[in-house]
Length: 180
Image (cartoon, rainbow, N blue to C red; front, side, top):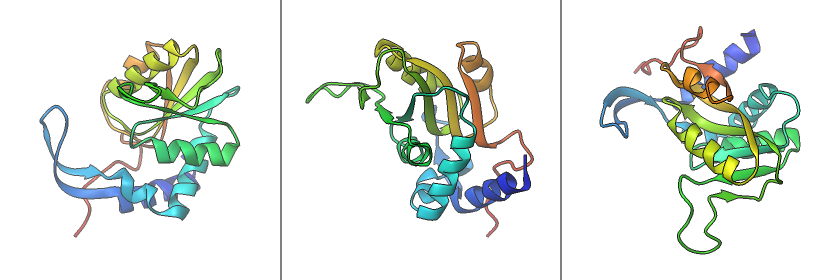
């Protein structure tokens, strides 16, 4: 990790780390958590984070797909940094309107980079990848602002999806409680 990336990771965590309690969808309670909206709400930090995520893109990506809801601002920042078109992936299709799960209509065969705020279990990436495949695209990588420890990388790699993040909790700059 370069000193520039380390400095960005430290700023992202300093702004986004909140002391708990925080209840996960599984019911587990955390003493501290990462609030991506605090990072996304800072225009300069959002732009820098988008540029850092853009540097993690593999070659030949056609579309940047933001996952509902936390991944959307970061995907749009990557899209702005690269000039690549964006798509937005809902957890489930809306039951009204156009009833789409994938908004933005990526072209068939497009190689897609999925962007989320936090990758913990890999479950949301798997749901999004399924929707993108059903839309005729090829989801090849998942990027996140923060990757938490766990088996997400192995799960996603097993599905042919590479994983990278600005902050990897296994890295030199792990998520830790905010000092009061």
